[in-house]
Image (cartoon, rainbow, N blue to C red):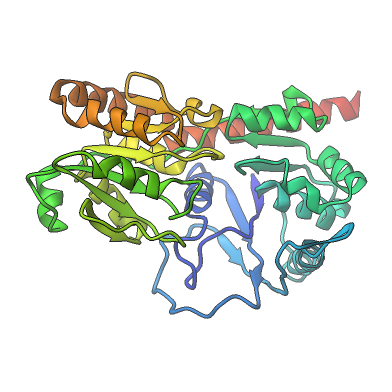
Length: 381
C-alpha cells in the first residue's frame, strides 16, 4: 500500500532525537513492504542548532515544508495554535499537489496531526487514521472550537490509542469502540536488548561497586527526577543515571551520570543499570519503560492507568508517584535482594517480546486494512 504519514514530530538533521518512536514505527511500515511518504512541517522560527550527519537509515520519502508556528495561547475564545494549524494545512496541501503524492490512506501521529490531515486532504476522499499517544486529551481539546473539533474527529476513520485511558477518552468524545485499536508503544528488540553489565560499566566509566538505577526522560516535575533523587539519597551504595535534560537539575552525591545521550547509546547505559525508576504522573504509553524492560531491567514506576497497561507485578512495582517514601521502599526491596532482582529481570526479558515494534506495526496495518475493507463494504451496501 501507499501510505502518507503526517507528523510534525519526526526526526531531522536539526532535531535527530525528536519523535524517534514515530520514526521507528514508520520504518517498520517500509520494512513490511509498503511505500511510505512522510510530510513533517518544520517551524520556520525554530532555533538553529548544529546539524548531525544522519538521524538513522531513512526508508521513506520525507518532505519538510516550512511553516510559521506560534505557541498555544488562549485569547478569549481564540487559541493562537489555530494560526499554526492553518499554516500546516496549506503546507500539506501544497506538498501533496506539487509532488503528485499518491496514497491509499493517511496515518497521522498525534490527534493534532489527525485533525490537520482530515482538513487538509478532505478532497482526496482517502481514509485518515490517527495515532493517539498524548498523555491526556482533555486539555488539548480546549484549543479548538467544539463544533470544529467534533466534526474533525468524526471524519477520522480510525484511531490507534496507546492506552486504555486514551481509548476511554476517545469513546467519551463519541468515537465508537470498533474504530479504536488499543496498542501500547513498542521497541526494536534488535536495538534494545540486555548487554553485559560489567562491559557497559567499563565502557561508560561507571562504578562497579554500587547499585545503579536509571531514569530516562525529561527533567520535569511530572516525570519526577527530583523525587527519585530524594528517594535514593537515604539509601546506601545506590547511584543514579539521569538520562535526559530539562528545567529541573538533579544534583547530589547519588548522581553518577546526568545528561542527554544519542538513542543508540541508551540501551547500552540501561544495560549498565540494576533497576529503572520513573515516578511519572502522566504518560501516553511510556517508551522509556518499554526500552528498560527490553534491556531486562526491573521497573519501579507509577500506579496510574497508562503505566498499568505496560507493566505487571512480575517485573515491576507500581507506587504513588508523589510518595517519596514508597519510591524508596520499592527501590530498596529490589536492589538489596539479589534473588528478587534476578527474577524480575528474567521476567522483564520474557515480557519484552510483547513490546516488539515489528509486531506492533503489523497489528496497526492489519487494523487499518480491516477498517478500510469494512467501511468500503458499508459504502457499497
